[in-house]
Image (cartoon, rainbow, N blue to C red; front, side, top):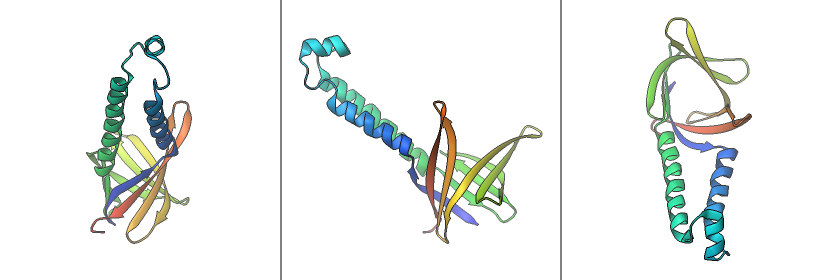
Length: 152
């Protein structure tokens, strides 16, 4: 029971995206003369383009970190939970299944249910690690999120 705050997210696909984007920014237009850069990128001043792209990447990382910092679960003994995802809060029912699964059931307009399932990777008195899967660009991606109990 208690309230758990997200403190870390591990996602290989997301990490790879950030790393590849950073490599592209760092190398974009280097080793080419102005004529070639204009032909490929439409501009000669690649330093300005790299700065703009770096600001965008940094902004994306910051937004992700802020969303994570606004993610928490407050489990109540009556099998209800207050779920805050990226600052948006809702109450839902929670149950544990037989396969290390944490299930959130949210009733929306009548009998329509939204069910979210998280795999419990690790659980101790002060730390909870959950893995979830989502469809991304025609494939399946997974993230592991680490939560710390309030006050720890």
